[in-house]
Length: 152
Image (cartoon, rainbow, N blue to C red; front, side):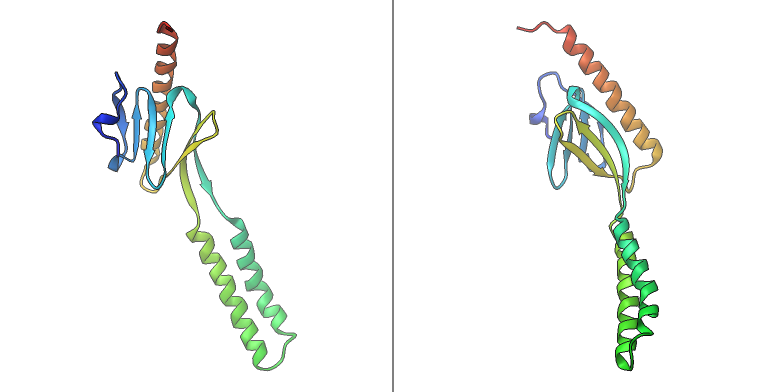
């Protein structure tokens, strides 16, 4: 959690997400969830929304559903029914797994390779666009201010 003691001199909050997991200040972006990540604004290289799907699960599911009835024709007796139900069960399992493992992420990458990946289940498209605009504006201002300050 981001407390008042964590601020740098002259730092102020521009935007906070619900629950204060994502905090954008005039110097940095911090994300505190399972992992803690802080990226200085001048190091932000890209911001994007991405959906991650594991298509291998849907492919396996369809293969098991289609091959089960076909391959069970070559078996006899109880083995035929066991194989049929097993392959249909596995097919349904993999299709359900496909839907359970989908992720929609808001990703902020730094030029050093680290990234903030935040699930966006409850954010509207309008809120996402507002966050992106705030990050871009804060970065422009931060970089402009860095070049104006004398280096000692």
